[in-house]
Amino acid sequence: MTPAGLKKLEEELNYLRTVKRREIADRIKQAIEFGDISENSEYDEAKKEQAFIEGRILTLEKQLRNAEVIDLDQVRTDEVSLGSKVVLEDMELGEIVEYEIVGSMEANPSENRISNESPVGKAILGKKVGSVVDVQVPEGVIKYKILGIQK
Image 1 (cartoon, rainbow, N blue to C red):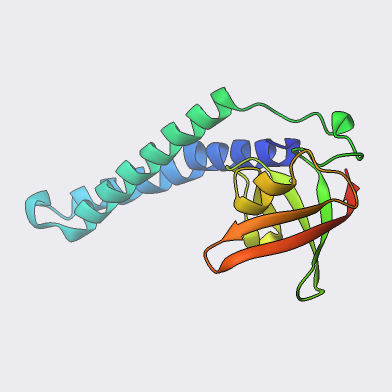
Image 2: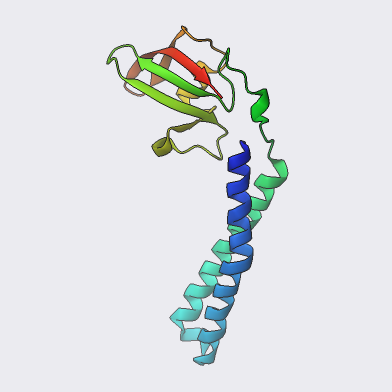
């Protein structure tokens, strides 16, 4: 995981522990004040959200305990590795794309952050500038040429 990804998870965990827990506790308290909780939809919804938030907190805590943070100073630019920013050319369409290779917890394709476990990530890991790789996708095979590698 990148240092930025670690920080993002820590911020989310802190927000859930401090702000969201308090908000939900207030909602539950308010719903209880309405009276009979056996037929109280506000109470039921607040309890469901509380369970969801507590589950997310447990997940984040586990992820943070098991996270291995990438030392960005150690990211090489001679071959693709976790933490690399890679410029690729789609050999068929001629389109140029840039991806950052991150761990699966940080992947966000809409931000061009792809997992090292994704088809493209797997295909380019360990490759050098100038390499042409075949990526198996549901529609067939896409050929990419690696044009650049940056930190």
